[in-house]
Length: 394
Ligand SMILES: *Cc1c(COP(=O)(O)O)cnc(C)c1O
Image (cartoon, rainbow, N blue to C red; front, side):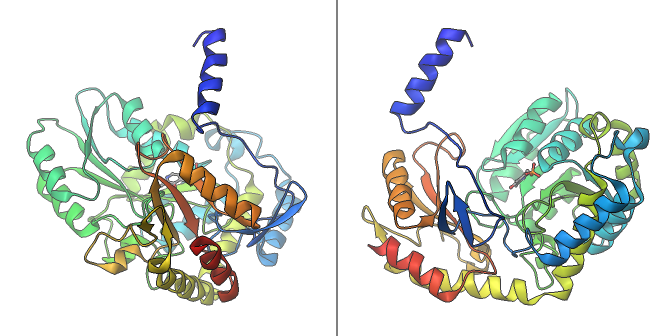
């Protein structure tokens, strides 16, 4: 883009209420957040289990720094791969019951790395049309033929698969969809991938730690083995409260990624202390399972109040379109409003009332589906959820 077009673009974004700007955070993540010197009740964090500022995890982080220093100094393949990284990989593999796991510096990079390593020109990638941007970008980067199927529609996927003559095919889906909060039809996707001899990759950034009886994520709901879902991606910066990501699968897949995933090879390893902190996080997911129980209670409590909310003639529970309500019991609870201006306005009114809820606009979501994206955490109290519901209904 030319210099003068950039200026025009910015003005246009402003006048369309699409301009994005950042708030300055001055406290740790938590249900109460300091922004620009003011305290807010926070309903837009991905720190679903309240681990981002957990004393045991911060302690493990500090201990990790004392042992390894701050920077990892190099990529994993040179000499940045510490004992802490290696142990975390083993513990993550065990946690998700897969033979191996491989750490990536971010989830975005994990998705780019896996997809572009597996696929090339002439191959095909099939993506849910509401997949996270990083899965779509990975597909584009790979130069495979990218086809988007209707959201959570295994039937539409089946039609597209049956028409494909590509030798290598990959189906990619979010586990819990990041802007919609619903869960992919995983059992059907497993069937489709098996029948068409395709790879299946599940990005469980939001399900890990929050979904399933023991917090193993969406795959726990259907007890999917590594044969059912050969590629599982999880992130560490959401429910696990730290930073980074991993891919889990069989030994050959992981060794292949070490050889070929460019976003793994050509980047500095995450600090070893982050790995130490994360080792404590996954321990706490089990030891403090009450966090997940409380989160589930909070989600149900919030959902009970949704039908009473009406914004612009639309009720709050407008996202449950599925016959199975279980598919919507996730920490991400959007309220679809549609219009960008209205969505931004509601978000601003909430902010004036001391409540943070993010307004999600295109291009993050499709045109005419602007929404409030409300996220619930284990640490929210009943009274705080009521405060949100009351303010919304006004
Ligand atoms: C957040 C997110 C990512 C990216 O993970 P980062 O570690 O933040 O880069 C990927 N996929 C989904 C579905 C996400 O929500």
